[in-house]
Length: 248
Ligand code: NDP
Image (cartoon, rainbow, N blue to C red; front, side, top):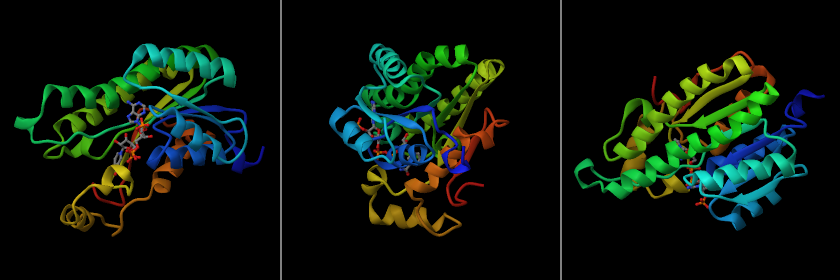
């Protein structure tokens, strides 16, 4: 097997794979030879994204990661129809920013249920098969704000900090079964999620980035490919920061 196709024969499930960072990392895993299950709430966009990936055998699925029943069905379907599930990337995420005193119960719950419980739902559903096969890679996409905190993002930062604790617990619990779990913490990446930021906020953020530019989805995707592949077989429980030197 050439090194360029180090994930040949493996199945990867990427939540939030229809656009932004998830789409780029689905592309990178597909380029490494994996067959990819692209998951998003909008099934049509997930299927369209899957159809554009390099290689054969990719599929798109509509599923809300916050719905544990739907997630259990999704994982069963992927394992049965795609022939396994070796790599899980929990990337689906939303923001619903507001000042703390104005943040509604609903805004708190929606963000925690998608970003944190969503990852738990997928890990719980996928872990059984991975443990049985004695091999698996779980990669959770957190954020630098889960490390630093951010005004106006109490719900989002809490969900992302929670993902780091979840990552470490899963890494400890599943290590003896050959399942590795790591997190990737992107900084400020140019996607639809960050496109809505006002120009002044963009400029202020840019000034904090040592490398002097926003990140591209591809900058995150190649780190995920590393964590999914054979080169990372002695790495677990870690959070890799990919932020151009914003947080040190
Ligand atoms: P986008 O908003 O561009 O894409 C989000 C993706 O998640 C879409 O595919 C969306 O599809 C999917 N999604 C959202 N909610 C759900 C849900 N409940 N169930 C299933 N899929 C869902 O986001 P980014 O690409 O910018 O971000 C990807 C991840 O990276 C997120 O976890 C984000 O927090 C994190 N991140 C992003 C940073 C950035 O600067 N952009 C920085 C740090 C972290 P659909 O709407 O159809 O469900």
